[in-house]
Each structure stands twice: as C-alpha cells, then as structure tokens.
Image 1 (spheres, one colour):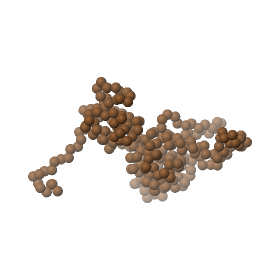
Image 2: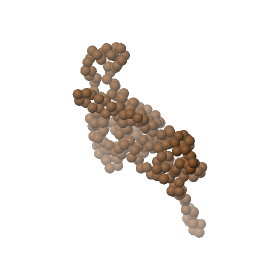
Image 3: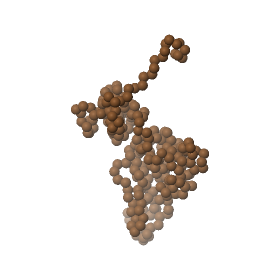
Image 4: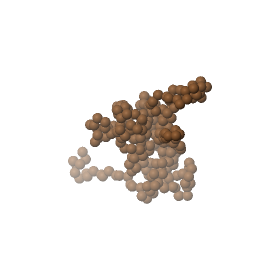
Length: 246
C-alpha cells in the first residue's frame, strides 16, 4: 500500500490514464483499504503468485462502526488515515495489540506503526494496557469512550446487560411492549443495531415475541418474560438510628 507505483506495462498505463480510464498515481490500494474500512468491513485479502488476486469482503458492513467514524468521537484529522482505520478495525475483534502484531496488517515496519499508535493514544482513541503501559512499545486497547461509541461493533465486549440493554428493560417495565422503532428512538441507533440488541435479549430469555404478534418485519412487538431480573430497590434507611440518615 505504501510503495511507489510500478506499472508492468508503462505504455498501456500511460494511455489508460490519458483516456481517464485509470490513474497513474498508484492510489488504488489505499483507496480500496480506506473505503472498505469505512464501511465496517475487514480489509481486502491479497494473493500473489502466477496471478495476483485481490478479494474484497462482500455483504453488509458494520453500521455501528461506520456511524462511529462519522461521529463526534472520531478526530476529523484521522478519519481519512488508512492506518488509523485499519488499526480500529483490528481492535474491534482483538482486545489488545502491539506494533509488532499490526506490522503485517498495515504493511509498515513496527517503528512506523508505533508512531501511528502514539498519535491515536494522544487523540484519545486508544490507551496502553495497564500491564504494558511502561514498555517502549506497549500493547494498546480501545479507550472506554471509543468502546462506548462503537457499541455493538466491538465483538469481544461482555454481552451481559449493559447500560443500553438496561434502558430497554426499563422501557418494557413501564410500557409492557417495545419495537425496533422504539429502540432506535430511545438509543439513537440504526435498524441493525436495534435488531441485534432485541435478538440478543430474546436469546438470553429476557424478552420474547408478543403473543399472537408477527415474528418478522417492521411491526414485531417484544414483551418481557418471567426470567427478567427485577430492578434493584435501594434499602430503606433505618429510622430507629438517626445517625443512619446522614
């Protein structure tokens, strides 16, 4: 991605560029890796041999990751940096990585990768792990604010009831029903994120489809099950001892 362009047939490349059918600047790989990352997809795979093959990942990208890149938590000066995007993509699926582990992925020497990691730490996107913070080249993990901004895009986060799941359950306790549209309005998220949260809560047995209601489509209604934990109730103060009131 970082070497100078070296066309195999300079005359053919020159004429394709004159016809505006191709570029001569060698930016194709950078652009492909950058735009794939912005969609929340894994980077293209490259196979070199008798034939050179580039395989782009298909299917839908991760909308939660794409929304994070467009949001306020992402420093504007880093949104177009392909190295930064690829590191964030890698740390969506790995709790911590160091420059050596990222070197092959970024196609850069470890010293160059370390400089990128340091920039990301200074911008608040990453933080060194506690166990390696004093090393020259520590392992890095996503900062707490980055994880909160990415939400479901981070695959290794504990899938227990988090703050947003708790909001859904509180809504159900008050209103007895919830839909994908309600979740989107309540959490300010997109359709796939709302669907994933509802599906996860249903698989854990905390919510279920409303009786006699549809199970597919935009009008699915969910209700609480008997397995949902009751909300914590703070203990009443012991009025017999006046000191306990303060």
